[in-house]
Amino acid sequence: MIGMSDWNTNIINEFRANEGRVGGPFEGAPMILVHHRGRKTGRELVTPMMYLADEQDSATVYVFASNAGAPTNPDWYYNLTKAGKTEAEVGTETFPVEVIEVTGADRDRIFDEQARRYPGFGEYAVKTAGIRTIPVLALRRA
Image 1 (cartoon, rainbow, N blue to C red):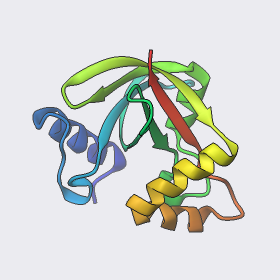
Image 2 (cartoon, helix red, strand yellow):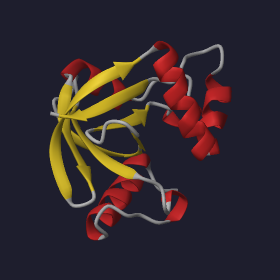
Image 3 (cartoon, rainbow, N blue to C red):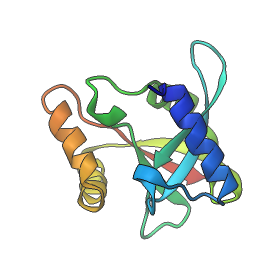
Image 4 (cartoon, rainbow, N blue to C red):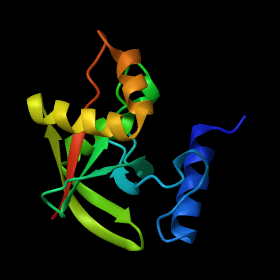
C-alpha cells in the first residue's frame, strides 16, 4: 500500500512534469500545490489540492480542508491558518498568497459549488456531519 507521503510526492512530480495537470482520480480537475511550514516541526511541506477559482476575482482560489471526510481537519489547514500567507503553484507559476478563512453563508455557497462540480466533496460533508464543518480557505495572490 502506498503511503500518503508517497501518494502526494507522486502527484507533485506529475503536476510539475505536466504543467500543472495530473491524471488518475484528479484527471481534468483544477489542481494547486500549496507550500506550508509545519507549525510543530518547522519542515517545509507541499500539499496538492483541488481548488475552485473565484468567478469574480481572478486573484483568488478556494481550497477545502476535507481530509477525505475524516473527523479532524488536515494538518495543512492549521499550518496555513497560523501562517496567514504562503506560496502556491498553479500550472508552471509559483506565487505568494495570503490565506483567509471563509465562513458563514460565503463558505456554504463556495463549498456547495465545489460539491456540485465534484460530488466527492458532498460525500465528505456527509461523513463529517455533526462532527465538524469542512473549512474553506481563500488563497489570494499577494
